[in-house]
Image 1 (tube, one colour):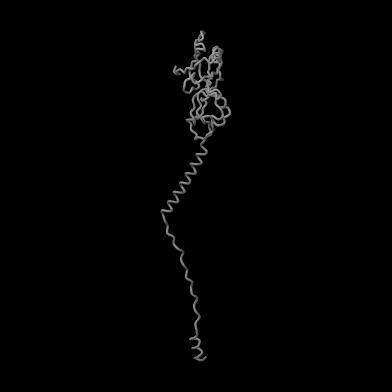
Image 2 (tube, helix red, strand yellow; image 1 turned 90 degrees about the horizontal axis):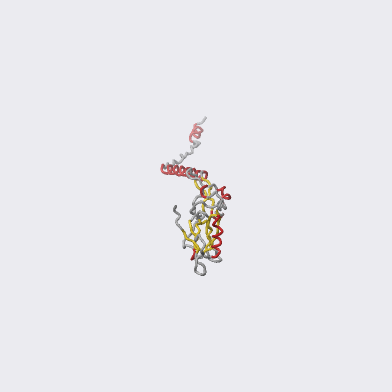
Length: 224
């Protein structure tokens, strides 16, 4: 083999060795402890709020309350009461909303402020009028009735006033002791109609006197 051939083989171009591709390392993320703590706090608050909302909706009850002030002696009507939801409290014993229909038409046994809860003591169990007593309605002009509100349970006297001739009837007694049941304004006459509770024996005499218009109502102290 000739020298020239060997030299040609030696000096010929050599095949390039395969280059290794450069591997880029993944980026390193910087941890921010403040953001992690904030995320944990927000998550915890969300859980607490969710638990509170669930507890608030499951630990409530629907009860009855006065929509407007109900005075003692008044007959409770549908527009006087409403259904509301309150948190359950063992110290309270309000009437449940299911008693709504049973409450309509009953007489209030005490004054109930607007928004006040109704209880079993809010109404009277006895029929109105009770045994041995009667209710008499008396129409009174502004001059015949005190210029202040009258409420159920108020103690009053219906006094006989002089007639057209200026003389009071000679019959006795000259007044009738009564108890106010309720009142309302007669829009036709402008008079105040007062329903009073009196003994059955006095009802006829009082009704006859009231029909003449020669009576006046006096409000007495409710103290015993």
